[in-house]
Length: 336
Ligand SMILES: NC(=O)c1ccc[n+]([C@@H]2O[C@H](COP(=O)([O-])OP(=O)(O)OC[C@H]3O[C@@H](n4cnc5c(N)ncnc54)[C@H](O)[C@@H]3O)[C@@H](O)[C@H]2O)c1
Ligand SMILES: O=P(O)(O)OC[C@H](O)CO
Image (cartoon, rainbow, N blue to C red; front, side, top):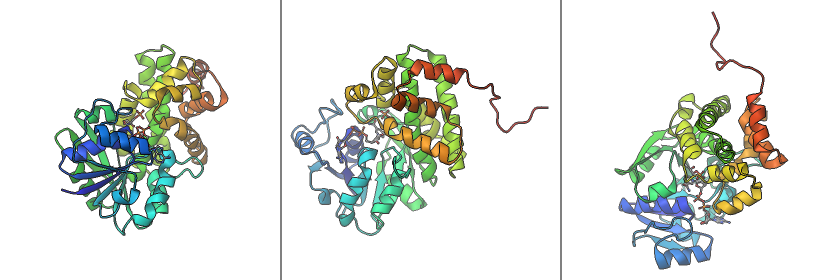
């Protein structure tokens, strides 16, 4: 039995707390939002973000961040990416040398283009930082539907410790040393999922969705490999796996926001309607900036940015994607 601190009590933090408590660990959940902690203490259920998922009585809830950090064997950082830096700053004074912090959010910081694990390493140099992601909607994890994710760390022993702590018969955890590839796949797929949602909102079909997923992973792979990630990661759970689930699932916040925009809502109206964090909107500009920095062609990412920030209609972006210069699907194979 380990002591685990869960930093953040949104749908993902709550679903993972249930996995950990079901595995017999003692979990202390922190949130900055007092009413959220009061509701969790009273109901042992997150009535707004994960209704219907009852949490084990063993879980403790606190608004004192030190209680979810001091003496914990593992700390899970599950706040949305825009709060990663401010939360890491808040955590820093309590983290002991070598304490493991697992980042489970998905995003790229817009101003610095840093990954979330890089931000945590910068703000909390004492910590051993790791990541965990993959195709995993909180709504399904919360009710115990079989799910697979990947624990990524620079040292094998760190990844294997995370694997041991989380793994059970419905939550399978692989390990990987490719932290960068995992974080790029996990965050950039959200931008493609916005496009997939837009296609759904416009009433397009399965052919369109398959095209977006396939050409989307080609874009992600081009960028990630140029940045030093391993190609295998992008064809694994944290790349194509997470892209498929986010583009297809009825639970996806990114797909839903895209769908509402495809149906005519503005970005502001769509995010208000979704109520939970739509990470693709925060990662879209960073993805475009990375494409420019590394000189990689990312036409879907560019198109999503035009819909989000330049008021272009989603239908006109699709038309311009279809009518781009004619190309071969292969960039490396030679003709006879
Ligand atoms: N929900 C999922 O299915 C899922 C699955 C995998 C990964 N993720 C990732 O996990 C991250 C969190 O997603 P979520 O779905 O739990 O989001 P959410 O919108 O459900 O949660 C937001 C939570 O953030 C916390 N919060 C609010 N304001 C804050 C502040 N100022 N500072 C610090 N914390 C604050 C609160 O606990 C709040 O409930 C995202 O990056 C998301 O992509 C989500
Ligand atoms: O609901 P979304 O779109 O935020 O996606 C959640 C997870 O990233 C799916 O793996």
